[in-house]
Image (tube, rainbow, N blue to C red; front, side, top):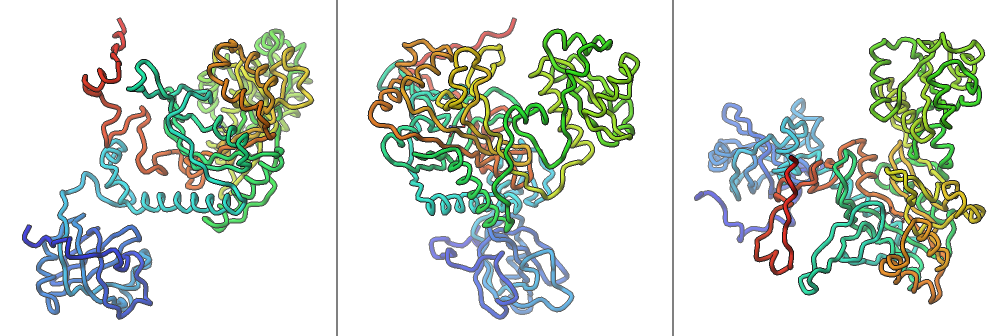
Length: 593
Ligand code: ASP
């Protein structure tokens, strides 16, 4: 290690960036600091690419004019950290590398010092990586050195900076809210933190700052925002993550129009600042009922047209028993034309049927197909015309309970678009789903809230609250981009009696209401402005911008799908002493017998 330099004697903080050198730097003497990305020995000359956060530049070691540096360079290995002094020169014509932004120049080295040596990394630090994801996550600090990943982090930074600028320009005040809270229901489990000083008592980590931002409105802040961390102890489902970052917003004396307008302006600004793309506003709006009917989802992707149609009425008397059975049981029949679908093989149709069954459908029928002989001519043409099917199309038909039929059709719609590549490329399709419903059925068929229990019912539907709760619309909105929900929020209840009534309809006991929400209800008695807000998931937003389905592409230190941190080795057991101090005893789960 005798050639390893003493880092206390050098400062590269103000040195030029490797990745920033351009033809205009020609002739300049520079000192560069970075990682050896690649070394090539070319009969006498040694070339390395030196990489830093800004990119990489080619360095040339020539034994004729810097023999010591050249000799040291022959020992360089990938990922060594070095200091190079030298002169920027334009490459000779024909030797430029148009694939590198620095490719018009190279640096002729006069001096080289090794600052830190490196083991051979477990994978090459290049954009196209061969390593599996577990290895990349274990060595995340190496993975993040890959230019692609560095650029992703940088892009995220740009987006967040644009958000700060926009919110500040609109007089929103950033206020931090605590991490140690009392639970706030957002539809997931709380992560809890034991209190050492109050044995047997626990804090909850925020699923979102929902109640606090409402209390900030009671406090008169008027316009609040925060880039907030939200922690939700989710089950192991493919698209669920336990730790997210969201832009959290709340405002007073506002209507839906103010919130929607603010967020449309925000996305337009972010897209312009970061991508240089103009996003037309206002966004299209569709209500929840239409969204579920036509697209089978509350987050429709409208980069493709495919529309689902209801044909229940035309089939009430049908002789096709599968359809008739579902209708007689109060269900619906929905259909969807696959453009040019007559070229689909039987195998492909069977795969779609499998997908439908996987989502809980009893089956999938199609026209033309085996179902034809059970349908009258009138019924056949009713199905085709409802689905607006052309001569080459196949119409998929699902009969089931309404919710089930919607879900299944929604999945089929997406799958068909995926298989047939129907989504218009390069399109940013923003829309609002608004209004939504106040309540929905949970997995056990029990009534639960659609958004969260603080959402205001639609004024005209107030009379239905107790009689037909599922029909009550909510002053709630979701913003959807290319089929991904990127933000959602609502105008809130700001009246104690109404809030108590909604809690009751949700089946909460008075004691629980008092202990969990007493502070909010009390606050509503000290002068409360009408208020509403929204939260936008930054991770999802980044995924949409990058066009990736993998959240780990846009988060610096993510967890795995099984919610573990492979680099830190978390979660992990704690010492018996620590548990003792916390007054906690671990009861291991029973082994399945
Ligand atoms: N707190 C809500 C959420 O995290 C958003 C809101 O209603 O503002 O989804």
